[in-house]
Image 1 (tube, rainbow, N blue to C red):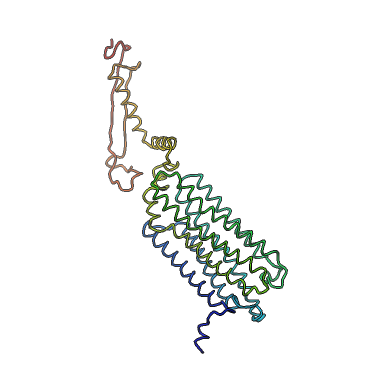
Image 2 (cartoon, one colour):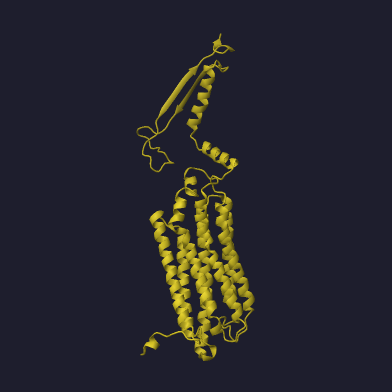
Length: 386
């Protein structure tokens, strides 16, 4: 076997080798990005979340899609249709049909991964509802696209788009890709909305937003893919003219996963760990409100929540301290009796610990305060009673 047969070269009439090289290179890049993401997160946070598992699912569909494209290339993608046998032409359509379905699945899970990350980093209920809405739109978009692709042509051969009765593929793909870009625009703008009024330095805001704004490159790749598709639909040689569109599709799905991994770079995670949007800290302290924004109302809300979380015995001591101060100035309450205030916590053998502290190993001091006030007359003057 000659060297030229073992290593086919691209020619003006066969771009198959170019398609294979770019496709597999992008897959390797995507896989490395996911590995770096998980390794970085485990090194800093020492845990994995739902968005990590969703990213793995997206990578799985991406690998399957690349295999389908490679089989499609072997069947004649990038070559002229009149040079292909009927069998290869049939395989070209079958593998292309599978690759299109897997492409939509990959994009779906990569978008949901970003939406789940946004759910994690914000404690604000409005932001959570917005990310949930984006996730719901993504699922709806996926169902519509999958259904349209699955039944794009007359049964029982829905993959045959050459010489078969199919609905308008140009209108369908323009609709699908337009909504694809709109969802990515939302995933770019949502982080800006989340961090815009957070009371942190501008540098941290820029780091967080830039990690999500890089997804703009996905939108650009989708636009290029759509342009090549619209150009190829008017051609009578689909096996040859669609190869630039296929390359763009590979770039779209690779960038979609890679950009979903970029927020897990160390600077972004350190911004979260520094308390920028620490929703887990808020929950651990018993506060369900928003992070500190630069308004007086928000600050009062946080202070009010913190005062509610104070222990009841501490509030009793404050009230009784005020009463003693009044008595020292000559005010005697109009009653006769006694009052006792006791602050109780775990004693030597107790089991109550500081629930809010993760590092404290000391128990709370037990303290009992008791006094008695007797009065038989009303106040005449400050410090004079009869």
